Amino acid sequence: MNRFYVIGLDDNMRQYFPPEILEIISSHRVFSGGVRHHEIVRSLLPEKADWIDIKVPLDEVFDRYRSYDGRESIVVFASGDPLFFGFAVTIQNRLPDAQIRLYPSFNSLQLLAQNLLMPYHDMRIVSLTGRPWHEFDRALIESASKIGVLTDREHTPTTIARRMLEYGYDNYTMFVGERLGNTERQSIRQFSIQAAAMNNFVHPNCLILKKERDGHSRKFGLPDSAFEHLNGREKMITKMPIRLLSLSMLDLRNRERFWDIGFCTGSVSIEAKLLFPHLHITSFEIREEGRKLMTENCRRFGTPGIEAIIGDFLSVDLSALEAPDAIFIGGHGGKLVEILMVVSKKMKENGVIVFNSVSDESKALLEEAVRQTGLRISAQTRITIDDFNTITVNVIYKL
Image (cartoon, rainbow, N blue to C red; front, side, top):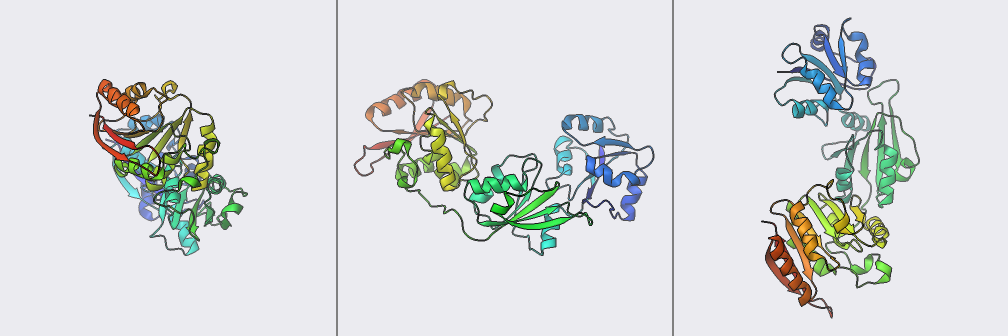
């Protein structure tokens, strides 16, 4: 069984360690940490210390750790609080049986808030360190009053500010802390989002976003007229009452991954993202014009993070996409049977599909497709909007 001492550091080159930690360092031989951690503690390590760099791929790092299984404890140096999106969590995930003794420090967002004298009990925490934008986008859409962000060399304060501006989130002030804990080189600066987008920053850094005013309105039901339409054709959209009914039938609050097939203007995807920001949404459209429409409408309504794929759905390589548990089929080009064949194999068990029949012919086509694919229609609701044809909202489950 592997045994670890995990010790948290800030960026100060002259760390203060209590006697207990100094004793741990002097009495052990195997150490590990990042390059910066090695620079900070190098002078304290025993003469014949064995140092294991923490770097990707982590498989190699953990292979080294396993080679000491049961023989020697490993002293690991990590940033801040190692349980706060930190390396102690990685050890727990990779080596569930490992014994860990933890000596945390303040994490970087705590240090930044303390320097700003900013209460942080109500701060939403997002890590972009080696992670995608999803949780950050969610915090913006949900209009969090304070957002603390852990950055990396790709998700910098500059790129974060530019993403915010692209989707209309200029209603925050950004506070950036660089080299926090380094008494000689620490820097804390305040920016508007526009100014941050034009600045350069020193790594390592982190930031806090503080909302100054309300931003995008999250209406329950977006007006159809507010969308950019396909060649100005306002009828080429799933109407708002039908859109809301369809989304309610999909039970999206309890779903994780949503596909919108035949998105056209993107209205269903955008409405879903605003109402359920936790969703991972992938949208498909055969028309190239859909790319521009989705981009424009996402910017208009402040919905980053929707993945738009252009091309014939039946020709798209779906192998790299995670299985959806909710699907809306807004367009099928006469190939509904083939589409249901594909999605019935790809989607998760107990997944749900909603398809809106606009005529008796499309309703009959759906029933034949369901019969061939072994799916089940569980509910059908008929609705008429103004002088448009009656729509049947069909709810289909994968058994």
